[in-house]
Image 1 (spheres, rainbow, N blue to C red):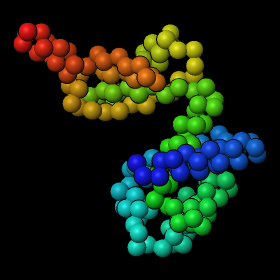
Image 2 (image 1 turned 120 degrees about the vertical axis):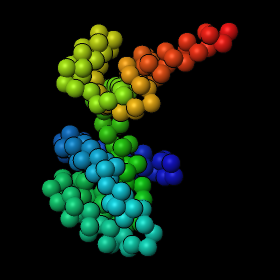
Image 3 (image 1 turned 30 degrees about the vertical axis):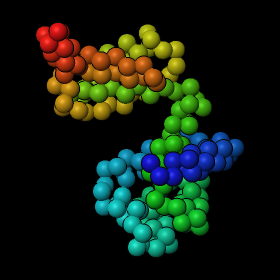
Amino acid sequence: MAGTRAAIRYAKAILSMADSIGVANEVNSDMILIASTIKGNSELNAFIQSPTISVEVKENALLEVFATINGVTKGLFHLLFENKRFEILEAIVVAYSNLFDEANGIEVAKVTTAIPMDADLEAKVLAKIASLSDKKVTIKNIVDPAIIGGFILTIGDKQYNASIANRLQVLRKELSN
């Protein structure tokens, strides 16, 4: 991803500023909102990425779309306006959330399932994770019908694959030997 190193530098600076005035949690909520809004709205993403739309128009539009966000987050929009770097906004908000979680001892467990998880399954997964990790854990559910059934749990650099697709692949290898 272009601008990832720059995005991390922006994210560190914003986190440091937010931390110093005690609003890091609030700004993290803003970052999560911005990330999900950009990810869920292809027109907004295309608008932000467009080289033909002026940075002034982008800043004003974002301030309108995200009118309720914290002043520190609004400051990020202005900084991106000044430096003409709106194209890395999504990378910045993702980097901020990752740095925030890391600083607060929060680990993100990615659970890939064939269909969206219900509250019951999420509770079971959280209980299992609690027995494996002493950190605070949040769950991010990724839906991928290609795994057919079961789940794939990823925490940090560890992965547990209990998907049907994986079992079929193992069976295929055994049968071909």
